[in-house]
Image (tube, rainbow, N blue to C red; front, top):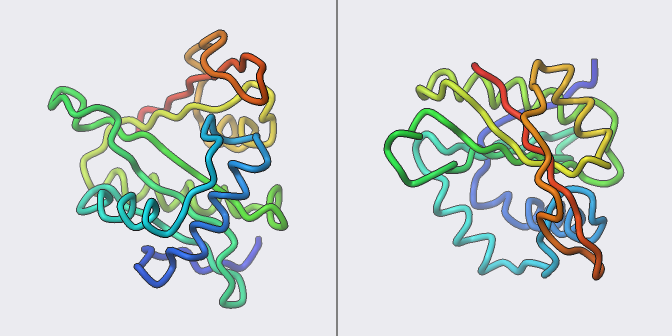
Length: 164
């Protein structure tokens, strides 16, 4: 198994998180975001992840190779136990087991913080990401057709879930 240190992110990790997130935006495989983010955006995002809403990073030889977060699914109290996931891996480290270790730790933290379900949204063509989630017990809920536009073309988005 790949030797990684998976830990809670700190403000000092924001530059690495930003780099990896912007790679995800540029590569058009993980998000409908199209605008490259800056430090101010990431700082505001980081500050919204308090308490139960964790951000993790994965380090290999003191290099941040990926990050994951539990995000608010809905502001309605009925959904307090549902977390929305984000996992981003540095483009040089995709498909090497980083996502698996981040996801396992995120689920552990989720259970400890009274989340009973995780949901995520992915592109149907992101087979690498789907493989990770399927192996971890996530199921496809459905596909939103023409959910967004990337490069001037409609893109479908697949919803997945797992009861923790």
